[in-house]
Length: 360
Image (tube, rainbow, N blue to C red; front, side, top):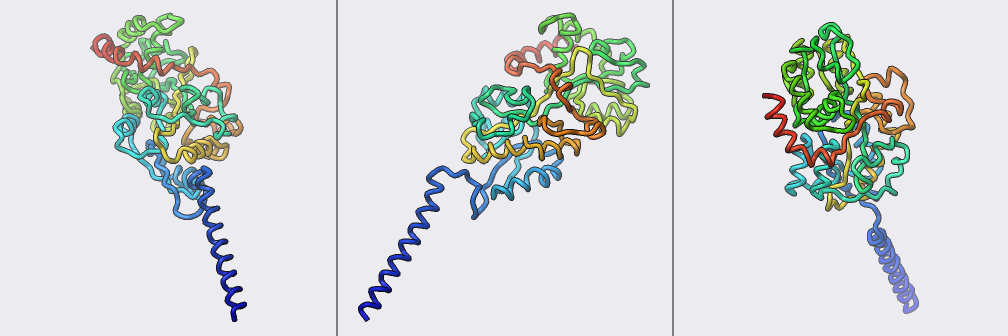
């Protein structure tokens, strides 16, 4: 009997030891810095701040596969650039990852709102255009899409072929034109284009404002949202104006003969970026998500669905698949890129001058 009791005692001690050993190993993974969301159990919540357009596409093709792979529950915070950036500034959100145009992302950088990313973890960076890798500096997030800002027009209503930024000053477009307001993302690009048309090889604010003043009489309305452009164009109130290429499909739906032009002086790059918000408890997981969004799989599906222009250079699109999006190194490498730090430093003064000198 004593021998049997000793055997039972030894077995009990052995089993307890195994159990404690197993607990120690599970805790060890956490202690050693295993990325959250990679194991079993309750999914990790990853909060993403974004615009909310094409939500069905993103849920199915971008979010769901990542959730399944990483045991993650993605929660969205939706709104425009300014609203969402202000929430982060005020500390009134628990966002891990934020999507912003480069114009607003620069403001976030200057306000110290973003974590410095670990580029060694984002391996797909090697496959994207150089212009998209570090649009706002090596410490911050890449651009996941690049669109070109050029000119769209209705050939019949315009009464002339448009090839250049300077063509916007043509008398045929008097009272047929729209321009973005200076407060919009693309407003500073029009200012830069006006400086070029005025003959300056480098940006000259005085020449730009003087040139834009002469165009004011031709402008039906300065638009703040792209939907305003589309509505005016569809109703025949305007014949031409600068716009992002990705919206040309909406213009063609109303006016099938619509043409989009990359001006001879060059179209402008409009880049949407993605950054990790400072204080995120899921930094590695957020970096994994950035890497996923830059992958050939996501970029290709997004491009073919006309959701976003791709930055990944490894995918190959047929001509019909590339229609309406900014695609190919021959196009992307020629785009003009504004210095967003310079823009933000001068924007307040430009807005004041615009209101006093251009629209009066």
